[in-house]
Structure formats: C-alpha cells, structure tokens
Image (cartoon, rainbow, N blue to C red; front, side):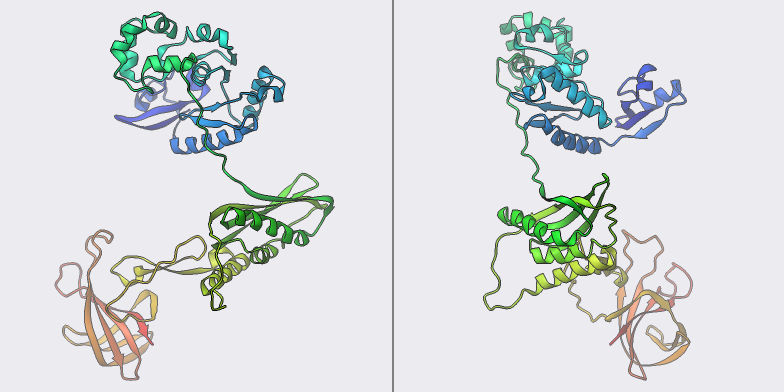
Length: 475
C-alpha cells in the first residue's frame, strides 16, 4: 500500500508501507510505473495538510518531556531538552520513554540526542537507531552522513557530489577559503558551510518554539463519588468565567465532562451564538445538558472546558439602564439550541442571486453570521412559497398576466396587475436552456394579491409554450 499525491506528470508516491519498502518501491516514483510492476499495488490519496496538522498537535503533546518543542518540516519534531533529562532518569531512559509513548500513540519514531539542533535532526533522519551524541563525539558522528542531510537544494547537492564531497566528513576536510568563494552568495539557510557550522556548534541555532496554546479548563475534584453534577456546575462556571475575564475572552463552545469511578467518562457540548462569560447564562445552558447522563456508580471528577473562545473586551451596560437587546437575543438562541438542538434553531441568511427562491436560505443560528437583507427596489411578497406552484391559465392577455387562472382548484379573476419584472437566468449556475421569467403582481376580485410569473417566451427556442407559476402571496 502507498499514498500518492499529484506530481508534474501524474500521481507520484508520497508514502509507503513496510511491505512496499521491502519490494523496493521508491519514494517519488510514478504510480503508473509502479503499478505496471506490482499489479496488486493499493493506492490511496495522501493528505499532506492533515499530516502537518497532526504533527503540530503531536509537537504540543511532546511538551511532556520539555517546554520547548517545534515541528521540523513535515515529518519531524525538534525538542530542546536541556536540563530536563534528569527528570526521566537520564538521557537514555528519556529516549526509551519517548519511543514507548510514541508507539502507544501508533507512531514510529527515529530518535537522536545531540548538542545542536542540526546535528540531532541529521542523526535522527540518517543515523542508525537511537543515537546519543556528546559534544566531543560530534564531528565523528556526523562525518559518515551524506551531504544531503544538511537539507540543501538539489543543485547544491549535485555540485558537491561532482566535486567528490559526498559525506560531511569530506566536506569538513576541504579548506574553507576555497568553498567560501563558491558558496558565498547563498543565503544562510541554504549555504552548506553555514549549516555545517550550526550543526557543529560553531554558530548559534536557537530553537524558536511557539507559545503553548492556552487551555481554558477548570476542574472539580470530589472527595467522594456523587450522582448529581448540578450542585457543582455553579462553581465550575464561575471559575471558568473568571479565567476568561482576566484574559478578556468569551466562550463560544463549552464541553462538560464527568469522570466516573469505573474509569468511564461522559461529555456534553454546548454552543453559544455570541461570545459570553456570564456565569448565570452558562449555568442555565449546562443545567439542561446533564439530563440523561448515566453516572454509573458515581463520579469524582468534573471538568468544564471552553473549546472555542473569542476576544471579549470589558464593557459596561448602557448608560440609560436599559438592557442590550442583542445580548438578550443571543441568550435566547443559546437556550433554544441547548434545549431543541443546534439544527432546530435557524434564521435567514441572504445570498446574492437573481432568483427569489435563492436569495434567502435557512441556516443554523449558532455558528453562522447573520447578514443584512439585500436592498430591493421592488416590492416582494412576505410569504414566498418554497417551490413555485404551477397554475392553470384559463384566459391570458397577450404580453400580460392571465385574466383568469386556477390555483389549488380555485378559479380567480384578475382585477388589476403590475409588471412585468423580467429576471434572466443565472448563466454561471443554471443549465443551458433555462428560460427567463416575467413576474407580475396581480390583484384578484376578492382583494387578494399574488405574485405570478411566466416561465419563457413563445418562440424563444428553449421549449414549447410558456408555463405560469404562482410564487408568493402579498399581505
């Protein structure tokens, strides 16, 4: 089995299974060429972006060994373990712990420990097994590695190979003056001499680790197992809101988790329409989520975590003493969604379109941005049918609306009308041959007003006779 990505001349192999490696399949080979030799080859599409996202999460998880970790390319992690090895019983014991824990996560890792960042990277990728290199053994350990371990450009590697410098040891023995004349124009990140000096510790190569992602999490540890979590939610909500207030943040998504004494756990998620850190509001949302949770023989740990937060500056209420209507609407949406479900509470979202049935779309109220309604120059009916319904024309005025028509088994006589308003099909979205529409606002003899349209024009070459439809009802 292999994973493939799109190359210049078709799919190429991006990753290989152990069986594929044993068969001699090479990374970067064309899939069609390999399939000709191995008809039983199973190919799946690779996900490089997903791999990078996973590696970022693993880099954060690896901070159990040291506080400074960073992703290295698309397949590595660099850790600055200075002063941390003794916490795990020494360097060798720490590497064993890393190998075991990576294996428990379903990941295989090549590990190396060296005085410099570049040396550790090269020994891990091109060394043999778990390598521990001290400062006095640095040049000896790096000497047999290929020059490609420096992560040079292909042209630079090809040039060094032509000069007979295939290993780092050979590169170390060449006089630097001669090499500097040839590579002085290259930047530091691609200059082989600069990279070699960094790996040997002659130049500084600090680790610029990103800041740790903050976790907005509060816990309640109980001395004895309990059955009902409601009495403990007030303290959890207050503690979490206090954390958010100090950072001027508001929660948009919460997760309540209870840990039972038998080792099982149950969680419930709550989404908010607007960022909030009001403990009373969060408590009302969480209280309804605890129903239906099986506590088993009881639980002794509760956690409340804000999975998504947004900036929420400190502000005061209105000077006139009135409540903010927008906050009240958001609180109502939160309570309805928590009780009925996120998909049950919707509002209208407006889309740029010529066709009336496409202008308005119902979207979940939580997690979506409400857009202002478009400004229409013509009157539109308040009630618009989901799908236009065809009407039977009993008598039609030439180039005008029907004088008599039947809709839902009831005949109507037109008293007056206004129109037409012509709406052309959207050529970038509709299929070829879609007919235009002529809309009319029609008032019948009993006072009711309808919105009708004729689909197509006689002789437009896009079908037979035009058809009439009723699309909306005016108040």
